[in-house]
Image (cartoon, rainbow, N blue to C red; front, side, top):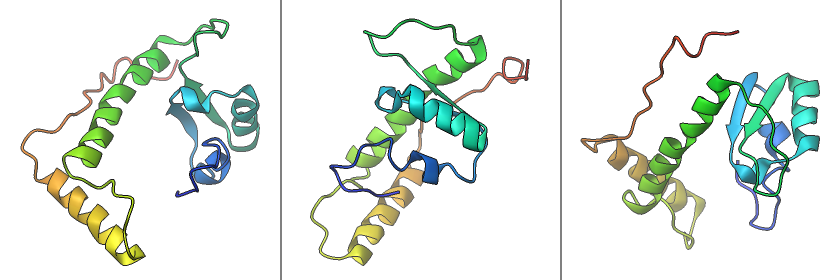
Length: 128
């Protein structure tokens, strides 16, 4: 979902997740008790984020903590798409040009010989 730069990242979350269920792992920019309660109440989605330094500590189940650490691999992939495949460009002259650039970057990424991956231990991910 694309939004203007001055839009709070938490604003489009409800609409973005309306077809999903389960758990969503997000960065510290999405920390909000109000948003977490709203997602759980309306869609049954549990929002899991790291805490900011000034926040009170809370217990997080081991499975959730392990999955939250896997976010760094996802961030690495996004960084590679932006920098190596060069899909981040702010001055496209048309929407078609923008999407062709993104598609070309994704194709280039797919042809990379080594890509980061997440090895999931299915024994740790069983429901409690």
